[in-house]
Image (cartoon, rainbow, N blue to C red; front, side, top):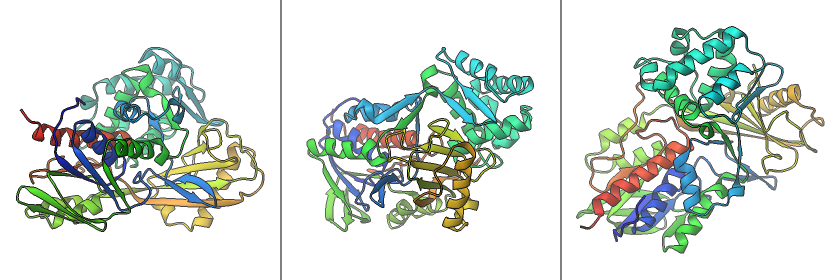
Length: 437
């Protein structure tokens, strides 16, 4: 984003990845930035927590090589290269499926990965290639209103291929089951990640906790440039006042030329509801359906060597297991991710942790029972990425008030990349309006 001196005072509400992105690009554009967040730990739904003297994340996240805006933002705030571990695309379900992309130009790397994948029949390979060719034109591949399950059926994808490849990718990317997920969004994600550049399909693992990955260095960067950061400050009202905005927060009040509301949908809806003329928008945002994500942490007394740093589980509660020790975490720590976890969210946490422990034991030697377990469920982790899901634009209709967040209008599902893109878009909207001739 080009640097331009705006001189405007801009408040950003929410220090998740979208709010952080907005604040950084606004500061680079010359705005005087104040960043508020009700939580004392920045990162929103991608932040660190501490449990039994161990640093965890409130949910396991990975990035893709295609996350250009996120990777650019990390570079802009001087995040060291060692904070990320980059690996070629590999999907491993021990004893069931093994797929690894070689370092060939796209889409040859995908064709080779499918050709040499373990556990696929010749019919599976041919069907997967056929779908891959179809999604090269993502918008044309899916019928408007079509679900992923319907798309896979129409493209003649065998049941085994659906279960082992496409459906796990769907729920991992969209956090919505294939029978309800938006096929057009899924096709777009596959196209952009698998069929453009080889490096786009790389799996990029954080080697530090999620607050240390971006929010901590970004806040330090903002502080060095004169931004005011108010963590633990809950914004209670946004009041239009004579062409400006009065922001009322637990840390005090202030007057601003513009505001980026980068709060989660429920909090954003509550703030917008009291802004004259925005109650219909607030009601639509407040009615957005959400999907949960559950992460189960298991701390063992010694290292648990998973077959791969990210190992798939077929037919279990968990979809993916992560070797947190290999990825820079505590010794003996395993994270199990359960996307679209409505069913698991209703299970007793000790019962769920015991079930996941058994699933770990299916693919690795475990040294007895874990010393402790921790189950974290983000009940509103993402919006439900279903056909026709409402995603509001950045512009609210109120001058100087824009939205940011992974739930807002955009081509991708609720990912870190979608959040960062929305923050950059919000900043660009404000800077373009306040640019002096």
